[in-house]
Length: 384
Figure (cartoon, rainbow, N blue to C red):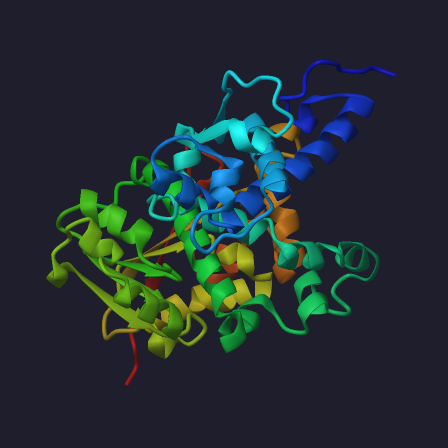
């Protein structure tokens, strides 16, 4: 059996033999350590302290009464991950390293502070947490029985994920989810903006656009563009009340954008526009619901005259069955377990578009893991 040795920093996917599985297990524990590091707000505490700090000092900060030894052992793993750096003192023979060894954030560690624009801590807390663990515990069930008993999330919590987030007692999870999506938008925005020319449109509507990160980034580049952020009531309320909001943060004039709340399944609530963005939206739904969403855009734009509509579907498209497409394959598993949905191949998207009354115009491959489908349609004149 082939073995790989002395490659502890490699991804388990790059290893062979027993090393693959032992590395997989150890990396999983590193993930839990990073989640704990974020969950306890340690990046902010270290950043606020400004100078290197010992585990003992960190454990005794105001409002903390933590176990210093255990905290040191956590920080040691976080240092191995390159998130903090370990500064040894001259007291090398100390039996209490929590009192002598100091730590400080690295450049990568600063990304985990709560005021960093990337919002990376929230996407970590979204994907690595007890809720996700409980959800995936039902994965064997859906492989055996399909969605007969609901998707994994529904079996774990008795409702779908979107209903779960609407509940008052789950506001914190909803907040983490929204910021996690903001983090994903920050991660992908540059690739999207540099790939597609949005300057040819007058009104761009971001469907399910969250806090407006992507839309405001596009409008920052295209000064003549009018933008509409469209999402559910509680999401739009959150987007409007953040001070500064995403548009203000990018110094976009107030007369160039608006917030509209509604339901993408109800065409009467969807604003009229000449272009629409669906980023990480269609993969949340099965084929029937996806077609319903796309048709809602058509119905929302019925006028006395024919009107051309462009939609941009931004997703991880399954371009091959090979390992080089592994990120899309992994995302597909996540969609299946949490929402009973899927990532799709280009042929599957083409089929969806055709059934919804659209024609595939172009596919843009970005430098990152996402692709952008541009599709067009023409509305039928409204008959009085």
